[in-house]
Image 1 (cartoon, rainbow, N blue to C red):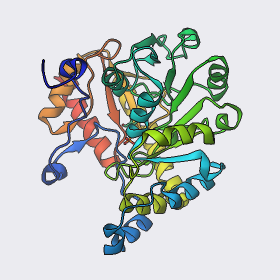
Image 2 (cartoon, rainbow, N blue to C red):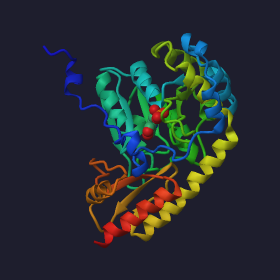
Image 3 (tube, rainbow, N blue to C red):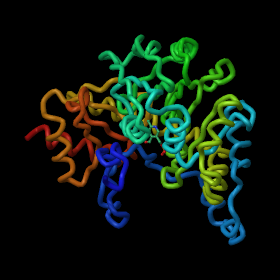
Image 4 (cartoon, rainbow, N blue to C red):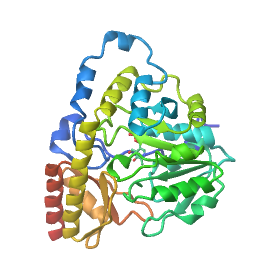
Length: 351
Ligand SMILES: Cc1ncc(COP(=O)(O)O)c(C=O)c1O
């Protein structure tokens, strides 16, 4: 017998996008992990500079009450509808542990976030993958899988597509199990599903501070759901799942809504410009509601373009997966980064 459970022994594990060493970052154009290209709010840096030894000596507030309060105000709910998490990824792990096992499958439309099958495997639960159509509409079959947990990533990664709030309300209504709506990228969309939490006792919304709030390094996200669901999820989390520094910093970030809104508008404007520039190079780019675009090259293999960009120290994301192997996912960077990418693509495609 090996040391590990059989499914862990066999598992490949999640493969995060490449992170170049900090010292090399100046020379690298990094558009591969959907980070925000801009720094967090100046309020964040002020709070960080004022962290005291006492805050570090003591255990943190297990509920992250300061953040809960601030996030509740921003989302128009009560604090008991919020649970703080060590990144949105922790909420996903907690949800798998809370709702899924050998007899309680998960279901989600594909292609989508590649962490879901990894978590299903770790939890030893069956994953029912229901394909999107070519326009990434919500598959009707998703309502009838009988899964204990259904996940819809909205906007979806890596497609950038968006399913309407009405469609997700209908899905929540039809499902017997829980519907987790992964809104990690919703800051860059035109609508969100927070209102569904008021009407449905089976809806959990995932939010991340990594994208719209420029805090991927901090590891902070949160759940929005009815208090009964939140209380159940709390039983599964580590007691001190978010640390004192993270609570203080994330609270400062979510309170600075003016900085947040200006930043998001900038990224959205640059996303539209990048989309046009890629289309001018004959890429097929569908409308994105996230901080990345998915581009299909008609004239050159996606994997070849990826390799040639790496040679030029430009990192984007290539997935050798069904439905994605002819496409490239590109994070919206600063104007300068986007321009460097476009110049490199022009050179690669002209050879
Ligand atoms: C679809 C999706 N959901 C959730 C997350 C988790 O984000 P984080 O753990 O950084 O909050 C990510 C991160 O890239 C994501 O792409």
